[in-house]
Image (cartoon, rainbow, N blue to C red; front, side):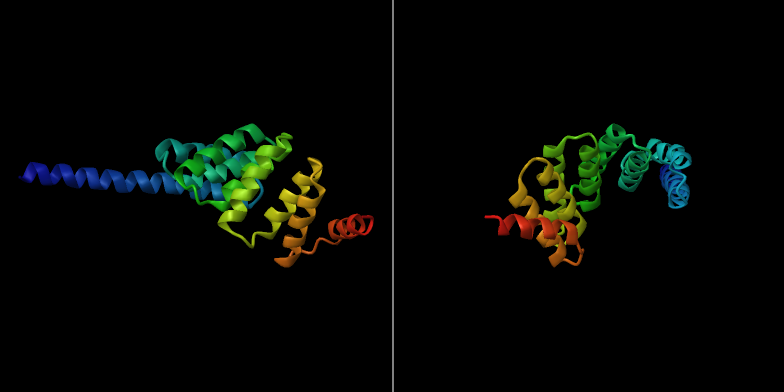
Length: 171
């Protein structure tokens, strides 16, 4: 019995140390990213993920660092993993959409912005960005609807709204 208790205690301590180490690596990476040194943050996120592959925050943060460093394909992969771990992360959908947009995959971008909006219907920046993608795909009316929603939710967008008013006036 004593041997079983000692084994369980060792496993519990090991799990606690394991989680703290992954969390420490993640926190260190986040500190560096907050200071704008995304390239220096990446190895800490890599280590956090290696130690705890289910640490969703590390996948998301590494994806954001890759996005900021213009590694859009790598960012998409990390945001996809973050979403597999937490399918309700509106920010992961938003950044994956932005990454797809940077790669000119506007259809995927619109789908992910729509998911972010479904999770947070007042996500004004997602409306603006989805409207921009729709505009590029020649869906002017859809773009105008999104831009109007962005204004409704507090994000001024005078240039785009002026375009929409002019478009409607010309009909």
